Length: 145
Image (tube, rainbow, N blue to C red; front, side, top):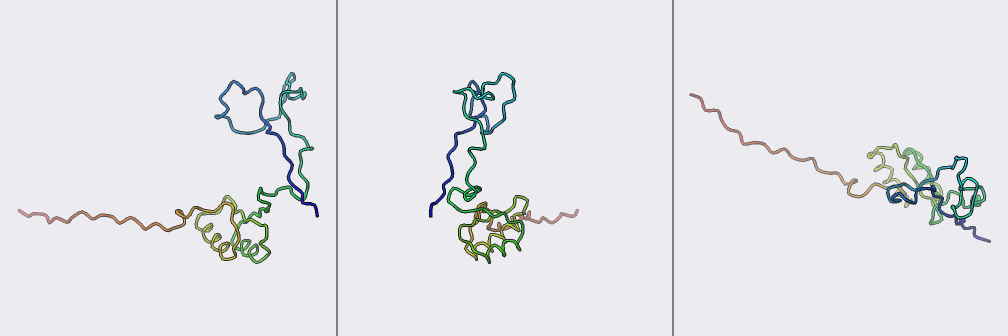
């Protein structure tokens, strides 16, 4: 059996930003649309542009770097179903719009099933913080005259 690996591809950078501090710019790709743009007409030395040839094989597409696949989970029922199924090479990803309270419950389900969660909440957030006690001012009796 031949194991497929993901292809390497160059970094697709936006041209023309050599004079600007690159640390301030996000890594992103914008298709060139200028009539005289050298990168659009694929002149050599101006960097690579994304093409369909960089596409990965279907067996490794959408795979994480460690070789596992991500499964998006929206609620507790989906987490239970994922935990019941085979957990080999699967990583749960909790949807972005799930509240912290539900995330903690879903992480507990995953922990019992020994299922990995990619976007876990940090342990210090999970621990319940004790409510701060209000300090009462000493009561003074009003002096009657």
